[in-house]
Length: 117
Image (tube, rainbow, N blue to C red; front, side, top):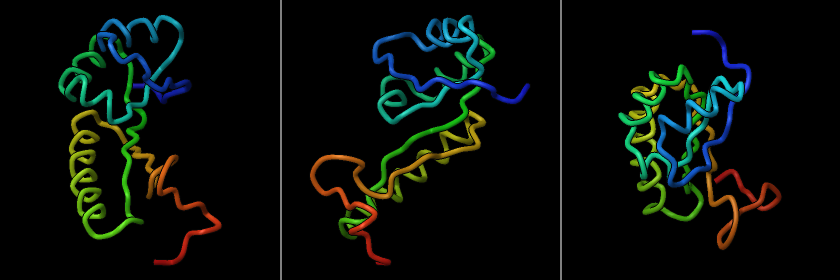
């Protein structure tokens, strides 16, 4: 498989993965990235089949973690990490792009506010 040159962030909530990836491939995209909702809507096996049918590659998974708001959320984030590592293995994806806390909304910790802890 060739190196990915152009990837697309999957944002089509109700689209069929096979048809969607085939469309993206026809537009010149080589790969795609998935956020948690896409993997909730369609299991990793569906994406793997769609990759096979379209020739596309999953270049990045984008889970949300929260390591800044206490032990309970840290434990939930660690469980999510294990799940996304399984997804990455199944989809032969080499990258996880993550937020260590909420990226927006209530509870955001900006870089200026972050502490070593």
